[in-house]
Amino acid sequence: MNVNDEGITTMSEQLTNTYGITGMTCGHCVMSVNEELAAVPGVMDVTIDLNVGGVSTARVTSTRDLPQEEVSAAVEEAGYTLVAS
Picture 1 (spheres, rainbow, N blue to C red):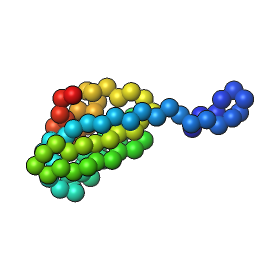
Picture 2: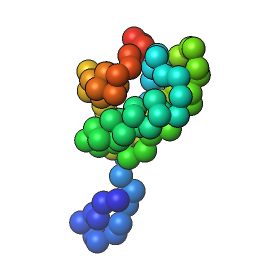
Picture 3: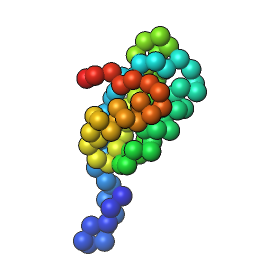
């Protein structure tokens, strides 16, 4: 939330992006990726839908546009691969 010049509280802009991630097979994988993505500056929320043996989906809500390189680095830090979009 932000406070404008009149002292009125307003909601910050929120952006939601969806990313594909490969290599995840269990709940621990989900927790690892969630933790790394949540640590990226500006990230407010992460929701991951696990697709064992396929491409899992991460929905990331943030207060800023996240460069693909930052998201990819966070996913790789957890040990997985971001699918090129």
